[in-house]
Length: 338
Image 1 (cartoon, one colour):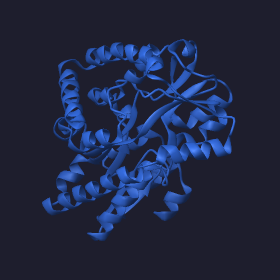
Image 2: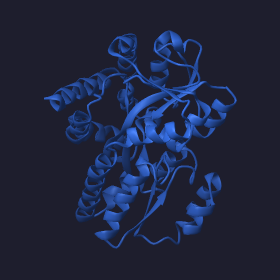
Image 3: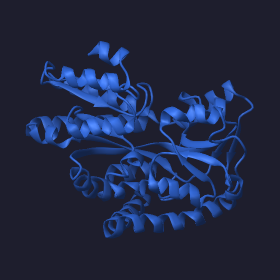
């Protein structure tokens, strides 16, 4: 399996992994995620692996981004039971679970890190409402956690929606994120992540959004010239298990898995302290010409106004269940702010 992890990618890895299942030991658990091993999802996964292996005889094999294909591929493998665990942003699960797109309503999540962490730790919507929606798709929702404030990186400066006019901004294949950037004045352009760097390099697209650590680690700053903090969102991700697999565990093992998730959750919140700033420092050291703009409250106002139409679009997409989720999230956010 080490050979598989190190040397095979994409569909070839998928074929080999499927073939290996007949001989793999029952105590080998496979966990795939959307980032590199040294990025936020990878750090979380490593901590989870460490806890599981320290408290059981199980082995956890980790598959970073690209090892088993794109995001859609690893979700299919998790639903099929080929993977026991998967970490995927609600941005990619929006087609499966439309209500999960609530995390892309702009200016819904707070910028204050303490409030944000409290919300993710205690949210009724996350801990009590979303699990049933994920279960309908054959998934056991184990946790959700924030990965950092989302910033725009573009070829031209952005201080208003007018600056995004006719600018093609790469977005995940998520209907609400498309709606958000349309409301912001841009031309949203869904692209698989593997095509983004080249798309920026050849000017097929002129911008993208991601947390700062990801902008730095994937070198998006090499093919863009401006970083803009609009304050519109914090990237969210979700860790799930194949539900049949999880339901088949003993009660003791289920508790052990959840305990490992809880330890990794605490670890990743602590790990992210100062991560945005250190990543920005690294970017500016590598490319001193990069401009960084933090929009003022006055400059953010038109973006915030545009967010109202996105919230309305979310309700239109999801109906009564989406409204209930949104209302509960707002209540949870208010509680976190107290």
